[in-house]
Image (cartoon, rainbow, N blue to C red; front, side):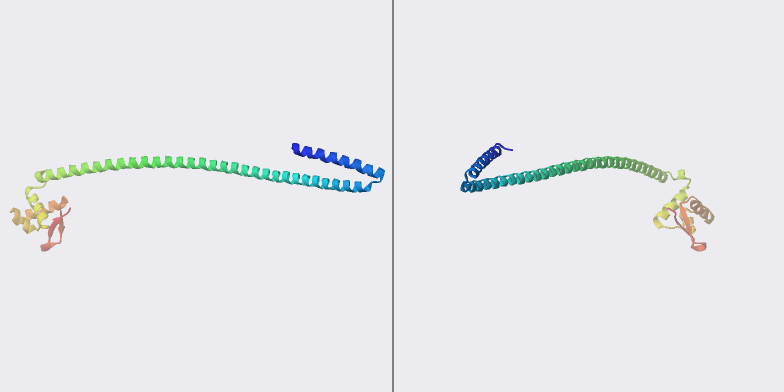
Length: 207
């Protein structure tokens, strides 16, 4: 209760006491006119006092409601902040997990890439070795077990796509039997492939 309200209460009760004394005086000395006036004054002051009390109660009630509303808002804000912090921590953990997985995937890709490059280099080296061997074979055909006649036949097939026993016999100047045996030997070695039979027999590259 404020100082102003305390002063108002004191004034009210002093006036009330004064009115009571005046009414008592009117009763004793039969002066009812004064009593009526004082009664009206007292009633007016009582109504004023009652109105102030009601206003004070209404103000206090509104203040209580406002305080409860503010408390509710503060609690809601605190809960929202806690929920936001929880989501933030959860997202940070999720992002960290994604970073770890991404790092693992990148490492795996890099390892696979290195392995692939290594295999490609190995394949290139093997191809180079095979190319060198092939070149060396062309320069020195006897290394593969072919005769000079068979090398001539092989080169002929490369240019003309096929060869027959008669063509080969005339090409290297050998008998028909020798020509047939040379060609069959090249078939066994996987260099030529026999096509047809009888007079239509011819040979093509097997690779």
